[in-house]
Image (tube, rainbow, N blue to C red):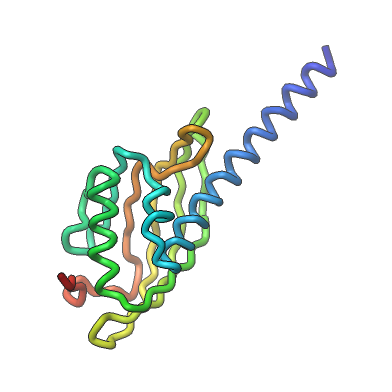
Length: 157
């Protein structure tokens, strides 16, 4: 019985590590897609029924569904000919099999089309889910902490 308990404990620990690694890899894929401006890779980070909420950005408060989220992102990226995003995970809470709540901190460096530079700092609170063996964003909410003024955010059509 002792070996069975040890094996079960090791399997549980391995599942925990695999989930945490999958969560981190999702955040890395997302940021790499932003930095590379890779629409397909960025879209692949979302569930079909995801919600993206960035209250500071006009038109990006409670965007629902992968297609609407991707369309909104493509439109918003036109504002920034240069945008570099770096993220650091603050906390991961695994919630049963295949779901996690995650808080991450983001540092961005960007330039608007008119040449003004921004250096916003903020945090995302996410619900991530595992679908078909891959971790995806189900719900993302961004809160600006420093360096982004809502009056300065304007879209280019």
